[in-house]
Length: 215
Image (cartoon, rainbow, N blue to C red; front, side, top):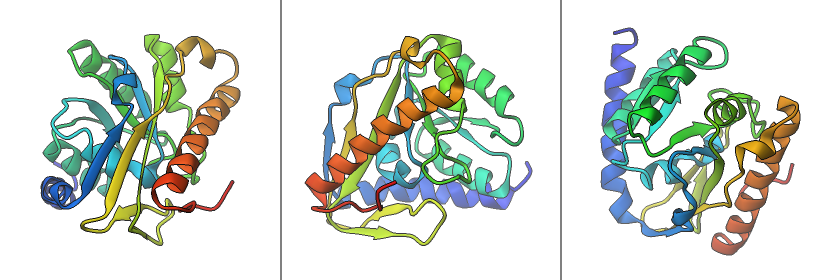
């Protein structure tokens, strides 16, 4: 396996998530909005909370074929998530086909970081729209916030919940695939606007402020 060392480190990180979660004061809101099957859409910088709320779910996700992708793939596998390898720059279409097969085999949803794997930050890439249209399934926005957060100086300004912080994961109203018709750019804006509104409102409620600057 290429990038074996990164993959093994990812397995360790994924196992750490299982240990980390009980150290948080956890709340999951509106999870009933997840329609099976669906595409779960979230920002790369907010993936930790959504991932911890999906531990052992058997869902499917995508990780690039780079060393960073191998790290992510290991973490996802350790968290009980099926992984298709690919990205917009390499193997993306093949990965989407593999995710389709996972969904047909019973995966409850496909989780996608819509601005990943390397940005631009908070710009929705076409993969989420493509998969929803292709399968005729809705997109469900998802995000998380916490009252004691550390923001990494990474491209995605990743939000890390500190131990013993209050952490809330929230799901938004599904966006039907029919609402994503038309140009990809217009459909991506609809997904972005729903994610931005959901994240901003949750930050203000849980953290008392917006953790990220307005776009």
